[in-house]
Amino acid sequence: RPIQNNGIPTKLIFAFGSSNTFGFHGSKRKTASINFFSPTTDPLSAVSGDSVLELRQDKFPIPTDTTTYDHSLCYLFQENEIPDGTTVTAMEMHSASETGKYVHHMVVYGLADPDCSLDMTHTMWVTASYNVPFVFPENVGFNLAQFKGILVEIHYNNPDHISGLEDTSGINIYHTSSPRQYEAAILQLGDPLVELRGNSLPEGLSSYTFTCPSHCTKLWNKDITVFGSALHMHMSGVKMLTQHFRDSKLLRTINKVDYFDFAMQEMTSLTPFEVKKGDDLQTTCFYRNTDSSRTFGLSSDEEMCVDFLYYYPAQESIFAQYCGHEVCGEFDGPQSNLDDSALLREFGVGDDKNCKDGALNLSVTVPCALLGLFFLLQNL
Image (cartoon, rainbow, N blue to C red; front, side):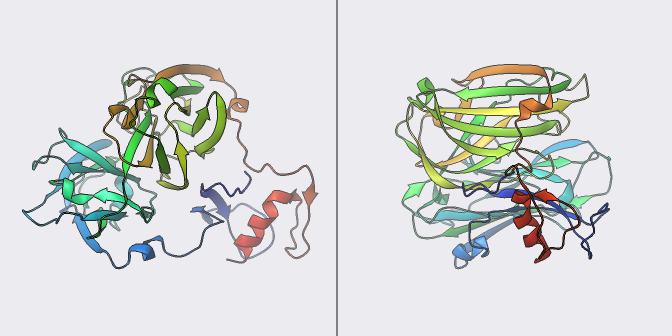
């Protein structure tokens, strides 16, 4: 698809070799996520002087079940351990070298009470196995001192039922003693509470559209500024996007993945933009299902549709935390028996002309829009 300066990193799928002749790549292939219009510095360099809270699993025995949601990684703060004003500035997933591949995603919660339960929690971060560190904008952070501790929910995916695995994965939480101007928060869109749980997924290609409509966003205390998004589906997901409307006019596509990969989910940093009270937010998930028994649910072989939207300033309204199916929002779906034209994918779309570039000495004719990418990969 076109490489655009819209704040959304471009997903790359590429093969490589030692000659200019195209052929089957075999194992010589890679995937990456690159923002071509941002500096290539280490994102954590912005918080290099901050303190780090390292939380790790203590050789957790990964069950042989296909799907496990574990909540044993919990850290309760000691009295006066976290001074007032302590602010989270960045978060990073630590993936154990041998067992990290069995960690599908993590959800980091701040605990309102000094006990390791999910009863009173505040969602701080969602990260997946394909992860890059997430650094907050310089004027935004989480007030760590408001919490009594940290609970990390880890979703393990062990489809081959391998036994004897012990995991030491975890997270690094970067923090500073200096308060920041704005408190961050997460708004979960789509089907945030998995209210479709147990509903069958149609066979073939289908789509589900969820809207956080204007009458819900009008209940917010104030307008918000969005700076990040994490699109989340499971193994049948093939495309997902969230769009922003005002007065029925499309303002922007907030985040989009044309070719969704269950193993390549990530938190996407966005160029900050404003969502006003009364705007509409619409999330659409596409699925290609070959299993007549597949349903929605929490398991890896079930399905979900949630966009975790990061914004500031934080608000008390429940509809600034969850908005979608069965939570003030609207649901349009499923649209079933679709053909691939419904996906409106843009992969490889450029102008109508084909180009040859003597400098690259390519032996085939390719769309002009792809030459810059070929040049980049050849010179890496």
